[in-house]
Image 1 (spheres, each protein chain N blue to C red):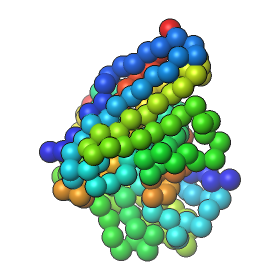
Image 2 (image 1 turned 120 degrees about the vertical axis):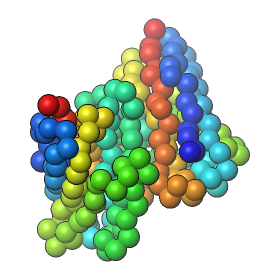
Image 3 (image 1 turned 30 degrees about the horizontal axis):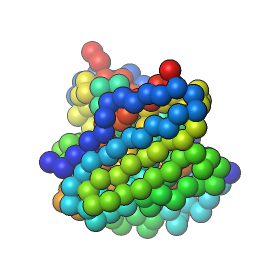
Length: 110
Length: 115
């Protein structure tokens, strides 16, 4: 069963840069684009990036993304206290014909 | 402004059924892919199913094993999720979302499966 793997946690102080990785396989990230979501449990998740690095209007350019082969990254620059949340990567998987979500990465601002 | 409002959640016994609804506004519903997802502390965000704009193609997470059915009423801008044979592990906050990459999300509706 294909999966997307993320580190469970990441942290940094205000102003620092945090990078979250997402590792997949040929059936998902290897051939499909990745999206990233920010989620505070109990609230509506927010789409941060789509098509690997595209930002919807209103998302600060402190959030950036990239993809290479079967891995993707979300970079949060100039970390702020408001950035404390769970972050998820997601991609369509051709082998199961469905979307996969990573396990989520909890970002803490120290 | 895109608005998605889920309803129909609640407490149900194991083996029971529930039907969730999602009322959509602020966009052309009949032109949009729609999706159901859920969040639980144990599993995080989990994609459940999506449905093509015309309602004639659906996709499901294999883990559901045929227990859930997604459907839509384009005339009423409503999305549905029929959930059958509910289990404890289906306890979660259920979200509907719009768009090819889950562009917008509702606030969610809680479902608790417990005896």
